[in-house]
Image (cartoon, rainbow, N blue to C red; front, side, top):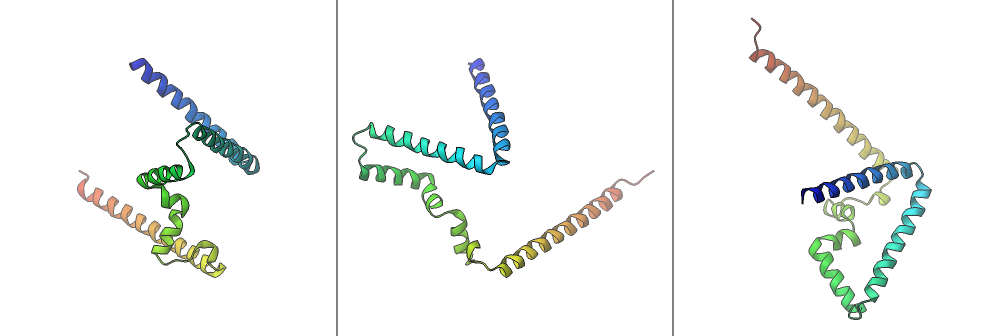
Length: 141
C-alpha cells in the first residue's frame, strides 16, 4: 500500500512540475497560450457533451436540473455565471472597472500607493519597537 502512495505522489509531483514549466513557457507567448487553451476547452466540453449523449435519460430539462443542483450545492452557480468581482462591487456599491473613469482609477491607484507607504511605515515602527524591546530584555553584562 505504501508503494502505491509513493507512485501517486511521484506522478503528482511530475505533473505539477510539468504544468509549472509549460505554464511558464506559454505565459510568455499569450497568443499561443490562448489558441492551445481554446482548443483544449472546446475539446473538453465536446467530450462531456458526447459522453452525456450516451445516457438517454439526460434530456435537456434533466441536464439543466442536475447541473443547477450540482452548481448550487458546490457554490459555483453564482460565481460562474455572475462572478465574485461583480457581486463584491455591488455589495460595496462600487462601479465596475469598465465603468470607472481614468480619474477614478488614478485616484484609487494613488490611495493604494498611500496605503502601501503607511504599511511600510508601520512595519518600520514595529521593527524599531521590537528592537528596543529585545535590547531591554537582554541587558549586556
